[in-house]
Image (cartoon, rainbow, N blue to C red; front, side, top):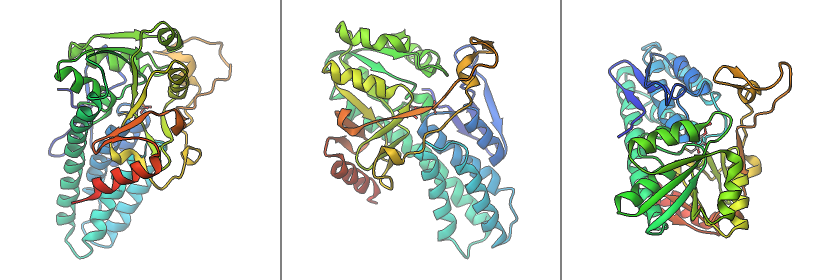
Length: 348
Ligand code: MRU
């Protein structure tokens, strides 16, 4: 099984997603700064994977801080603040940082070595819990798919985007494990091509039939009856069920509604942000326009032309037929169902 994040004694290892599918290389990280750069440069991407990376990245930095308190606490707070700046949209990052900060806060009198051990243990828990959540979520979501279904996906919400197994692709994997005949139509997902490069790579490894389409083909595919359901992941879900996900998701959701095709979102409760009332409050990352006009080192537009790259969009809750979490299948009204999922997840 693909697990893109490994932590050894003193090193965080990330499968370098910039190089897939051509090369499988692992990058070695030794500091919080290394982890911040890796997140920002998309070595690792996908909301849950970013959260796990942030946690381990903070463990690396914490080990380099003074062994005295309160100096350790001050330094750790600075590392956390810097980590939160790495990418703004995926709430899993701030969520993981907060979990580690709470550990430090709960051990005001402990020796730094004890705190360090607790931070590592918490990071491991975050990683393991994400994997478990994806398997459970997969089972809940698989029940929504027919025995033979073509699922359209956008971006990569697979093993590579998580601790393993995936959210949207976890639903696909679980359905396949149940014996359902599932095919995937993978939007290529311009400009970083998470669909063409990453979704295609991981499904091919699992022998799950996958056909890559350019982003502008999804309407045609839906119109001609080639799509039974859409399943996507999310970077942040507002309390009212508005869903932020990779740019282009909104377009797919509008098309799905036009064609009467169910549009499902699969995400762990760690992606739900009850602190934002609706999607207008979700910060949307703006990336360098050059990432749109330079692909694999090749410029495809005139030098000097302006290019825009909002990296995410928000799909309004009314276009979302269900939100699948590890707690089950949430339906509208989401303000109530999502709160119930989060409360259930918080139980000991
Ligand atoms: O820019 P990315 O590749 O980090 O964007 C990732 C997505 O939009 C995913 O769909 C989302 O994080 C869910 S991953 C399980």
